[in-house]
Length: 242
Image (tube, rainbow, N blue to C red; front, top):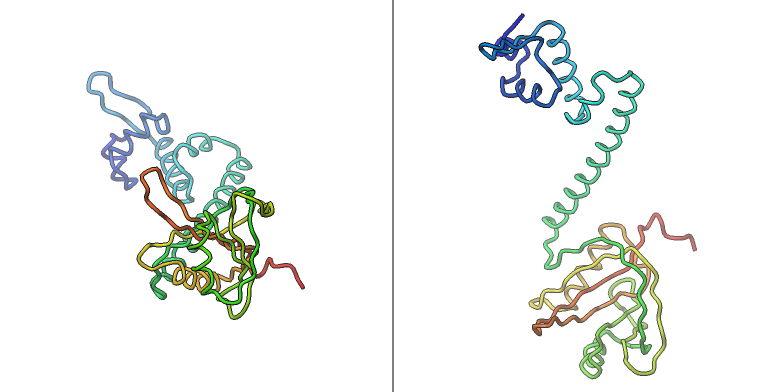
């Protein structure tokens, strides 16, 4: 029989770890001296400890190891398979985060695009046909729409369709639930530059515009203004064939 310090040295763990395992019922000593409180361990406990550490190295958390330590092999293999799937998801998410950070380092941007999904939206709009992007500023100044919509797949090279929200008349436009890329436009750079950066970001991430780009002009109760660009997107690989 070994005392807790001896077992800790043999197995390469701390005494604190062994006490914690005892506390949660994962590795109970073979005996406890009632007079001194010393914990005593034997071969059975050493073997159990090695199995615990082996399962930890396979990525299983202690709360799951407690249930699996004495479980049939088939149940353990199922838990490991599920854990491998979860780990692969985590790795993919971390890789995507690293790629986005690297992209931001390579191509400095004033905006931080976010991918998300949004629900359906109903708007009452007045449709327009513009010959040049420079006309947008005059239209927005004249009607002050809460939302401007443009049907563009990138920087405009000629005429294009647009729409502005209106309180009177117009037509009802229903936008379905969709995947979007959204960005808050810093007041210091303006919408034009933000739009250029956003379309460049979409191109680098192999995303295609899948509907009208929304330019929402928001005002909070304190009178502060914000402009939000929202572009519905599809991955190029998911785009329907022509």
